[in-house]
Length: 262
Image (cartoon, rainbow, N blue to C red; front, side, top):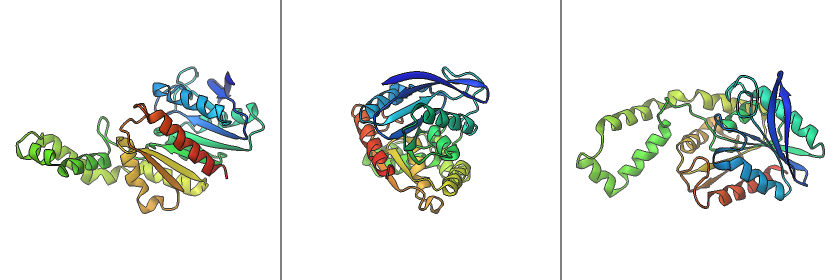
């Protein structure tokens, strides 16, 4: 059953949607960027519908200043009060829940990792771990792009015939060299996860720049022991909007829920 409702956060009224399932597990869903609780390409709405039909209650909301919610948008770094207020509202609406997991895409995943006190487990989808220069992909994504180019005959042909923009190439290589200086957010999230010690799983779209950057950070010693499992799917859609992506994402989320519910 789907219900529209409101709750308050620091004096502001926030809009929310509850898709109630019949089981004891709930999923608190946090949006990425300035997306409303419907999600890009209706990703959150469709996922909530499918999960609730399989017994998982899903609570999604617009943080302050976004969509149907009043107030000033605090951004993902300042959304801790929004998440805590949403968690309290979720528990009040579905008191029979025995375990509430968090689900977030992009900087919604980052917000959950930073501010997820009281949540029993995290599902982090294409998490935003590297704040790249505005308008530019993260260094790890640039590195993956050029590695793929140089591994192919067509890539070398373009390089040798002058079809490659060398100015763009130099800028890309410079981002690779200096990219490690941009990992402040990754350190903050790792510290938060280590402090809270909440079981966490990651889902990555292998062709997405944000996911490529996240994968590079997750392989570092900083994240050792912080993620219990990582699932990947071959798509370049950040929001899993390509044909076949929706079913794959649902399957991966259900697998993560099954693992984290124990």
